[in-house]
Image 1 (cartoon, rainbow, N blue to C red):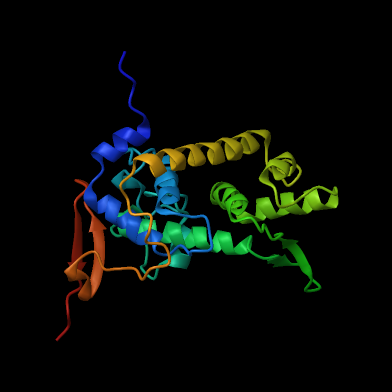
Image 2: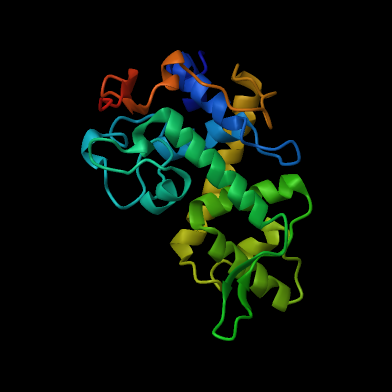
Length: 252
């Protein structure tokens, strides 16, 4: 009996070299003192885009306010980590290079929030109102990062605070899961967060064994993927999947 191919197997077989390079290049943004790797990025890409599902990456979704593109990035997050104005004709979330970089930068941000006791919001008197607790173990912290990619850092921080107030360990996701509802999540959202983390970890483990993406690029200077990048312009991913650099017209 022939074993059925997993989603990871199918995507590794079908993905383009440019997709591999984009994810590798974005992984250079990760630091040597975190647990994030190109396999983490591949896993989140797989979960968020259903491995490049064309229905998720439809052209008519460009420019929308909600989560969209290769990594299902919110428009506000894309604006925070990219200088390019998002329009229906040019939405960086649908560009594999830009989307990978934005996702990696966002993951680094989330990792930093749980690398310290970080104040997220202040009350009217200027005192810390919502804050994270330091998660010292980098592998445990990665679980918080993955969960926050799905649910946002505020919900995780509130769950940490509720656990701490109950005398429980706020640095363990296994503990925090029990406080997500108290932090404001619905039963359905709690289930979604738990399944999301489990799925991403499962994909990451599979990618670590099967993917040929270079895992040794962390904390390295990002490289240009094309000599054309020396010009002034922007990348565009065509409906065909081909990736082209559009140079801006120079005014003489």
